Image (tube, rainbow, N blue to C red):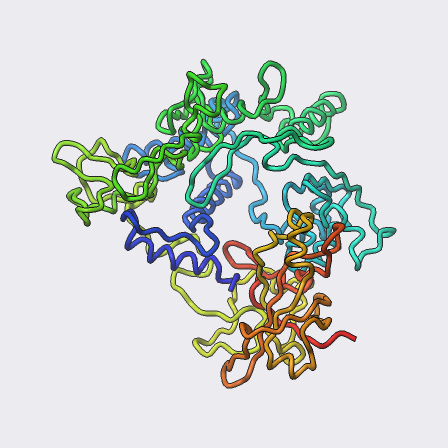
Length: 580
């Protein structure tokens, strides 16, 4: 269940640690996304900033501590000031270090649920929405729409009008009661602009523009640059709150006086501020203000100084199909961050003496004088073998327990926040640290009133909230409307036949969808009680000219995982009946 999403990931990583670095073994998360090491990094940064914000330590003092730790051989993100400091605007890096300026505290818990609550509570009065459609995709979407109605302004950049851009005309909204000023900015499609993409295998790959965008649509990069130019001009002319955050921002992404995405690529890769030379990799980053870098893990993806104006001659555009080792590494295809390393923690593929655990599958090997590297070594390759295989952790070892996890180091089973049964495995039904469970907007349901378990999912023919796919007529011919997938047993109980309209409701919302009776859905015996389960795709809502329908996420509960804040889209309670 999503309130244990991060917990599941940590357990996968524990398994992964026993095979980490071994060729041919790879565990991604359930959706192919980043693994929970990212949570640890975020927690470290969060803790660091919280400490700085209380005035206990300055940035300069932190750099000194980090540098001392690094000299002792302790290496992690925060003990690499040359990685961290280079993300600070170049003109103030050295001043901050010298002066020991205290960094201002930020809001840290900024999951989408937090943002929605901040809108509702009048803490956020303006919202830029880029490539998202929270009026449909957010759990308890009705609550999200009501919260958006408290905004002063909303800016949506997308390919088509989305439900977020027209939230005020949702079936449950009264336009005359909404004072939010909504601006819709037409954005170019992915094949109408240049840029790079990242996949869950950490590959960065460049795409050239195929066709020109239609009408007034421009790329999101151009939109951001135009917005910044106008906002900065207003600040210069009229002043305003927090001027330094606007006027001292490094938005110098121009070439020959025009906005150019390549300049942003150079910044992400990293460069020498004294001469503009692109850095070969993150090992060239410095903490003294002489280098700048947008994100250290990307350093090296755009590093060809001899062709700096040609993205097709950069590491990320390589298309070599050779696989010298036969291990499926393909090191000459694109750029795998960081450092074009294909398998993270590959030092663990060899024993403490540097000899591969499997001689037939060699990633790295010590030959007595040097390291043989079939993959870029994820360890100090200038040193002879030792047993420190995880150089990004303080202790240089794998961690079976992830200390940033707020709900403890050991796995435990909890029922979803809305569940029709009791947890017989331990004394606690629900995760006591699940987020937002007491928020009045959640409106949890009683299983006596809502005895049916619902889950949401996708269909092959549609993507996310349907903004793209519901505007493609032939995809709508395949899946023209939303539906509820129910068992024959439940259909018989409720008098429902294929194609009937079905009313599905709980305390948060109410939808009407078409019935699809299948053998995939079957009643389950849970603690001796027959329990029905239904499935509901989540791609439909009111906006568009072709396929529309009620929003299923009006039903989902906006409670969240204790660590990732991901809502419980996959398990909640409803009731169903044949619609009148």
